[in-house]
Length: 197
Image (tube, rainbow, N blue to C red; front, top):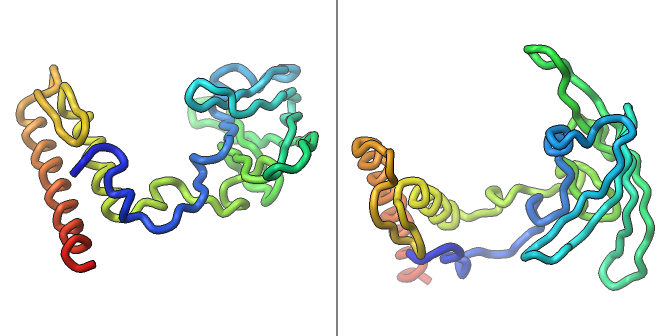
C-alpha cells in the first residue's frame, strides 16, 4: 500500500468535482469582513504559487456584484458581470447568518462555484464532491493516510513511526488497530483486482 495516489490505476473515469472549480465561500468572506456594504476588493485563486484566476467584487447590502473575464477553451475572453443576491437567517444566540441565493435555482447556499461562465451552486452544475468520486479502494487509502497523519509523529509513503506526543497509549492503540484494519481491507480488495483481472 503506497503513498498518496496509489490505487489511481484502479479508478475509472474522472468527472469534474466541486473541488476542481473556482469557488466563493460566503463564510470565508464574512470572516474576512468582506460583506460590509460598500466593501470592494479582489478574490484570487492560485495553484502551486501561480495565479489561476481573479475576480473583482463590490458588496452592497442586498447583493454581491462580481466582475471578471471568462473564456471557454481557446475562444476569446468575455467580460462577465454577475449579481448574486444575499439572504439572511437569524442565529440562535443573536446576529444573523449570510447566505448566497443561487442565481440558477434560488436556493440558499454557502458556496458558489464556477464551472461555466457564471457562479452557481454545485447542484446546478451537477458537481459531486471529490469524496463521492472515490472508489472503495481510494476511500480506504484516504482514510488510512488521514489516520496515519493523526497518530504518528512521522508519516510518509503509507508508513508511520512513533506515537504523537500527548496522545494516550490507549487512544493510540485503538486508532492503530483501525489503521491496520484499513490496510488489511485495502489489500483484500487489491487481491481481487490482481488475481481476477
